[in-house]
Image 1 (cartoon, rainbow, N blue to C red):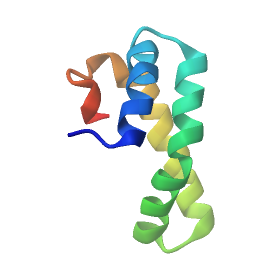
Image 2: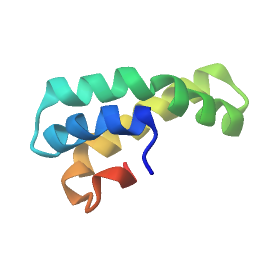
Image 3: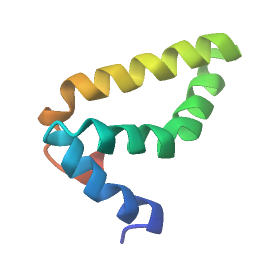
Image 4: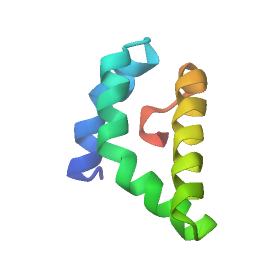
Length: 73
């Protein structure tokens, strides 16, 4: 069963996989806090966590077409 937040981002994931930069921007906006929190928990440094978060989103953008199941995002 999908949570409401997961249901909301699925259309943007599908669009982003087709190269839609605006949809990917919406994904970044919705997931920045989550990714940043995880990065901060790992790095223990705010500046480092911001760098890690940025690298995560860059890598995802470059490789999103390889995602087989959108829910895995």
